[in-house]
Length: 343
Image (tube, rainbow, N blue to C red; front, side, top):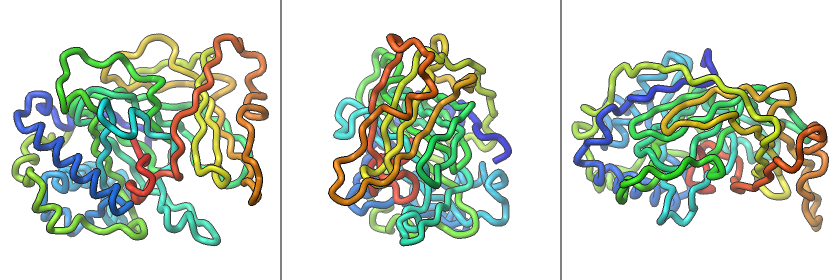
């Protein structure tokens, strides 16, 4: 992508008033359960996208068409997709831990290879829940600290769609959640999202198309959902804002003992509005991402805090917030593998 972040508030402009939303929510829950059971997301190739087998595949195909040129044009091979459900009745609560989307199989090889999607996307099906936070930072290949100067905060709105570079750090921290919209009844009181990553060159390892039996069991057909999808949704630039360097949240993430990370994130200065996207300049100190050395077998783990806080010694510590959110297994492909991938 030429730009690290795009916001399209109206990919599904009439979703709020759509009378079949409960069926869409049920299909999302069914896909989510399938992901959890088999530990992976779903694949839709460029060729198969011409004949989607369900409403959810039709949405994946629409996202593929929307971003194909941004993701490499003729090099694009397909779209990986999955659903997430968070909210009052969710066993996972409201959080999705910070992570990088990647091919998990290649990342776990004896000689790890980090391969990311070209474009990552989130389509919000409801307007409740925590925002997606994207930090302009790619993975740290070795223990150390990196500093990011920019990030993006996207608060949910029904029908809204965002896209960002497939190798960027992102998560869903409930610490930044706005008060719930009044009057929302189940299932709209939950955070339903549809995630779709565009891959070029080769598909991520180990994922396949949703089986015909599962697709047939879903309520919505392509003809049901396709009329809701805007063919050319407008891109609206995010609001510019500064990060508050005296109000910082800390997040621990990654696989314990293997890929432990900490993120220190300056909060957006001023109030955010429901449904908006914000481009945040983190300022002179920036947002810091630290990857800790691996823990030797039999070790007792790493202490939290310490070195990661060194760049912030001049801050007003009484205003500092340190919260831990999520414990994901690295993110990205095979979204059901950890239950925490992508926002």
